Length: 213
Ligand code: TMP
Picture 1: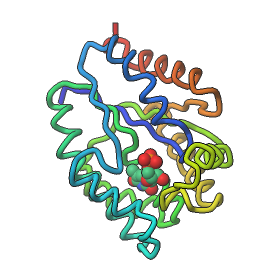
Picture 2 (picture 1 turned 45 degrees about the horizontal axis):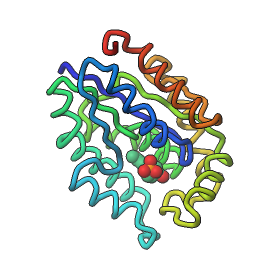
Picture 3 (picture 1 turned 135 degrees about the horizontal axis):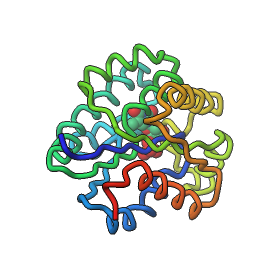
Picture 4 (picture 1 turned 30 degrees about the vertical axis):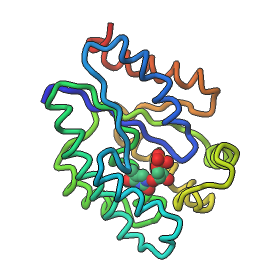
């Protein structure tokens, strides 16, 4: 497969989606291949339907393992519909979240365990992993404050979780980063958005010098 797969990861309120939107035009201008930006949960019609189901605030009684399986299910569909076809077409695919989110949120946050969540995701992704994961690190309190001030009371079901949940998510991300320091590169997301975007741009271009002018 000739394309390049990149994921963006981080706790809620880390600003990864804002940074992605900010860097995309410049990246595309300089890239020698076409860039496709996508996201999880969602990214394709069936996967977006599963996203709505998972994040619906009415589904408060959803079992933790059901949630983990639904995330893995939407990932499988997203992989088949969007990620693999675009990698086969030699494009750069940037996904706002991928499998590390499940390991951090369901494995760590929900305390299902890293091994159990990794194994259901192995079934879903069959070995497809990003070459680079840009991890946006921010203290949990800062992330949650950002969500509250930006969205004025419209948090989704996962954002409503208490601070301890979000701290476990961040701790798990950091353990994953220690285990895969080449793939998972850290961005200090506790800075102003312009600086974060600049750091992301530099990181991606430095990692793939042959892909960009
Ligand atoms: P978003 O805010 O980046 O759109 O993500 C929606 C929520 O879904 C966010 O709270 C993180 C969560 N999530 C998981 O818990 N597990 C996953 O596998 C993914 C992709 C997202």
